Image 1 (cartoon, rainbow, N blue to C red):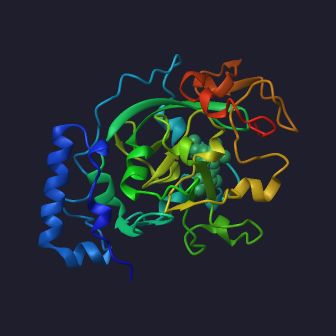
Image 2 (cartoon, rainbow, N blue to C red; image 1 turned 135 degrees about the vertical axis):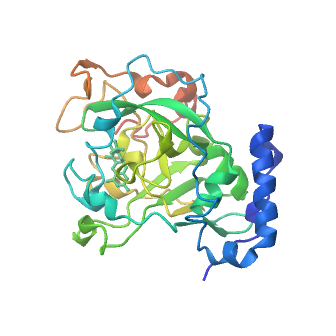
Length: 317
Ligand code: MTE
């Protein structure tokens, strides 16, 4: 059994902002002191006041604007990529089999002290906000979603990675008894993705725990799903169970399957085509419009500096 380490609960000041969130954290610490066995067991707080009810809708951060309409919730929750449940778009019903409570998340690798925490407790502890983000799939369709969640930077701060940690590797779950796609043993399960530490601490890198003003749907990656909107959608790993800090560049799920088509960086660029199709335009789900794709999916202002000295890297596949 994994133990929730005390260190994991100590948030650096930089990660703690609004007072109401701070008070919530204090309440949690008090409750943990009162019930250490429950907390340490990783049983979670499902069905109790500690589950995430009451957290949504989170307050919208007005800094993130779309320049296009929000996609209808019905579309975002019924047209999905989630290979654990099948290699087609209609997986939403099958994904309901995923049991997201209890759900434990491990933070390990090159950190001061690894820890395992119940996902609900983690979500309650971090400052939640709503952000409107565009999402551009490598298959050339796009959506725009009101995610709720927390900045990945806050989780990195909590983990206290050592100076030698260069990458953050994220892993999904592996349970072929609920996810029929995982019976396809030729795929390198679990789904795996990675970012550099600079990317993971960029202001845009976000962990979505909610969408459309409520808890995130299973088919969209409950309970924790990455949203890195300047990259092709396959980087935005769903249903994360583990965050590992490492000095080795992770080989992500799709890179391992077809590295010539899907690279580590996967930044959106209309001028670099996929080997089998153009990336110049995208089909907006919901509006039916085909529109020009933007460099970094329109987020160059926030992220272009991350890559300016990386000559010779395949930044756009
Ligand atoms: N995460 C996991 N675990 N498994 C997946 O198959 N597909 C990726 C990404 N994250 C995927 C995943 C791809 S290709 C895309 S485009 C987005 O999830 C789709 O997210 P959505 O279904 O919520 O729109």
